[in-house]
Image (cartoon, rainbow, N blue to C red; front, side, top):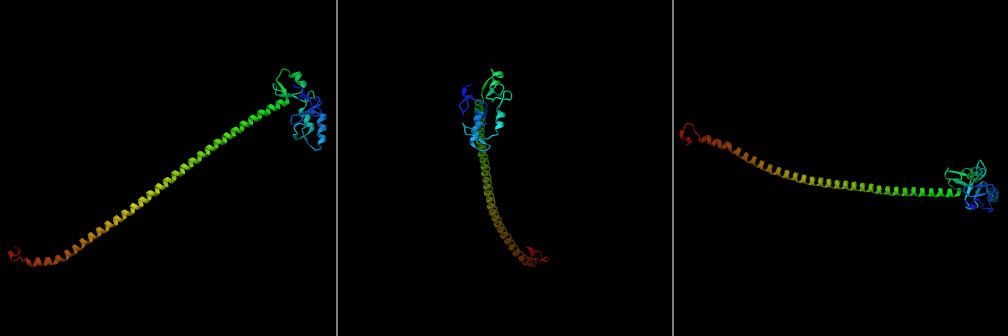
Length: 219
């Protein structure tokens, strides 16, 4: 590992009683305490390097980043055992393992997370596009159905109009035929009445002409 990983960014010397603050940068305990006291903002402290502000409980910072065995800051991440260790633990128990500085591991994890987030965003965009395609398909189906319904309604209206028109013509024809037949029948009735009126006179005449006592009366 490079020597700069063990240098304090405030005093530029090797770390003495090193601590790691939430953003991942490391400082001498006395250097960071002095820097934070100079900020004079209660409970809110910034990193001298990245100026990232955090609400910090200093005792928790020390406890979270200090080896419980050697009381040293855990500066090394053992990828083999997937844990943070101090330099002494690294030398005694993790030599030969795949190890990297904590900051590098954090940066690698952030890159991995960034890739995951990009993939999630890509999938979200893909899903949105698919949803857009489905919505257009739904609209197309609805439009086709609406058009078909309108066509059917128009066809039915035309058929109804045609039937009504033909029904009206047929009614007129029937009434016309009725009138003609009524006229014909009435004419026959008149002729029959005339014929009935003539029948008694003709009968009387025939009776007068026929005389049973005379054989030649009918000749």
